[in-house]
Image 1 (cartoon, rainbow, N blue to C red):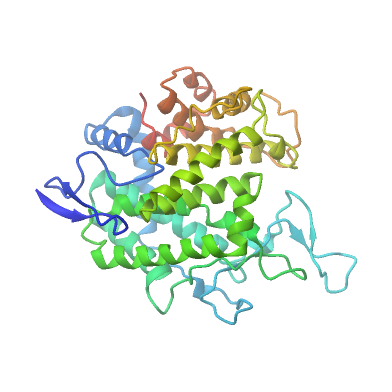
Image 2 (cartoon, rainbow, N blue to C red):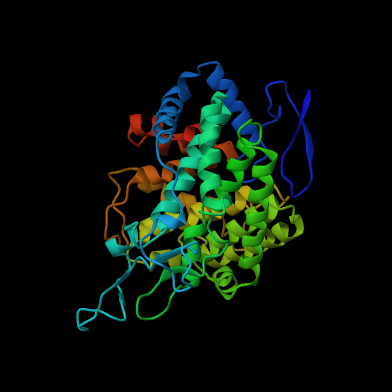
Length: 404
């Protein structure tokens, strides 16, 4: 047996197998280490139920190998700070005012995305999103296959974005989701940082790699510690954590995940205990989420917020807080919220609330598979069976929540 340092926050030294990985799975917080270990065994045994998803994962990971690493320095625009190392982006639902010659200040059109916000020249948001998705793909491909090429590429992407002095992002979101003519950044921009929940799990999956060195982990830990402090102390972080809708749900999931990674267990536990009140406030006894149903994309936002609530619940297992089974005295809980959305996994079902753009029912698949894994309830299979078979079989969620 050899030893591997995994997570500087706790200073833990854990025993690993001769292949360089923990026998009970990687150090993860949202994902279930046991599920990942089980998937790895099934992949090694060429389990037919997982091969389509595994093949798609490897295909995506191979495609990333040749891609150039991105950084905040790639944008053409400069943030108000005058420093390109600061992340910047534009609020998605704000458009030029046609009544003004210069279009300023921009005006809000809920649910209608201004194409400016996806332009890499002006915004770091799409670049950051791609980087995290690619790191997720590579880390999972490395963990399941053991092939170092995937971990080496993930290390490069992370080092360029967070670690190298010439390209590293500063640990703040001060200039995220600016509303032109009104402000240079908003607390709403922290929704773009929601993928830190997944990123810390990626670090756990990369820990057994030769490519992810102790120096890399130390530098990444330092960056995330600085960012966590900004998230704790800044007005943006404070305001967003209080937000009553999906924004508050996602930032609290992010806050809990970072706290767990950094070894701040009591902070994480307090955040997750407080999520019980959020569940009771956001979900009606019949499972509706009224704050999301009020949007112009009510179906999309109902699924989106439930994803964040499921993230909080999954993180709760790492802190001894059971949110999956929590129900308020009048029956408000996560299972009720999923039951409300479940009929709309059927493409033939008509959504009775506003939805100004098409909703793909496949977006419910990860929630359904996770619920089946958590609640040990085969009835979710009936809804999964209504989704396009090939698309569902190739979906990555099959690897994260393997069939029971």
